[in-house]
Picture (cartoon, rainbow, N blue to C red):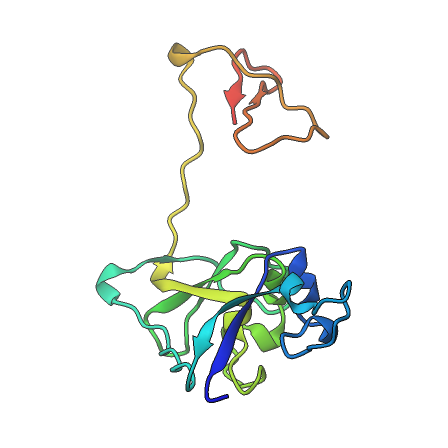
Amino acid sequence: EDYGKIYECKAWPDSNYCGQEAFSPLNSARLCNDQVCWPTAWTYIKGCTGTITPTATPTFDPANVGGCPEAFEEGTDYEEGDKVSIVADGEDYGKIYECKAWPDSNYCGQEAFSPLNSARLCNDQVCWPTAWTYIKGCTGTITPTATPTFDPANVGGCPEAFEEGTDYEEGDKVSIVADGEDYGKIY
């Protein structure tokens, strides 16, 4: 063939199979109910030729820069959505990176996947794009957000009180009435 094929690893839980030989798009053995296994883990996208052009090093416009989150710290147990900053020695501006979703978030605290690591350890490429997404440039620090305020003149009925161990879902509201307070706060 003079062309290649592009496959995309499916979302969890099927992504658990993507690294297994039986589910490789190259494997033509009929091991899954007398069918090839790869469609369980992979989606065929399209044909291709040549190679993908490498992406450029992230850049940013200093005129459109906000504060930097906490600096990246190797060995930290980062989770999906965590944002960190990298400020190179001698630079005035930093770069913000966001930890990707699971299962890639498992790599966010590992040295090989650090946004600081420029070694080509992942198929002759830098590893950080597996775990991190470049967001934008930054300078200084992020201004802390204000503590929520409460206006007793604008009180409505409180939703049910927060109860530890309850299985809350997206959009659920709870109230908390602190000891010694007459009014609750809705979260």
